[in-house]
Image (spheres, rainbow, N blue to C red):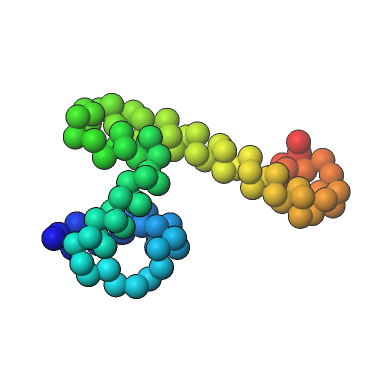
Length: 101
């Protein structure tokens, strides 16, 4: 049983898995295998590609660049949407970066 491998997985996004399975210590090989399976099921296609040794490094770097750009744009859109709901009409004509719309 490779408990170190499981710990590494938890370090890279396992916090979401921990919310599902709790914070108990899973010591048996069967328990560790089940937690690892739960982690695998929750991975996005992007995560699977980025972790694959079959995908060349230059492809992963290009995907990472595109993903980060998209993520930041989507994050900004979502934050603006939520802030608009929070503040309602108090910010008429302004974006939340302080500029005019």
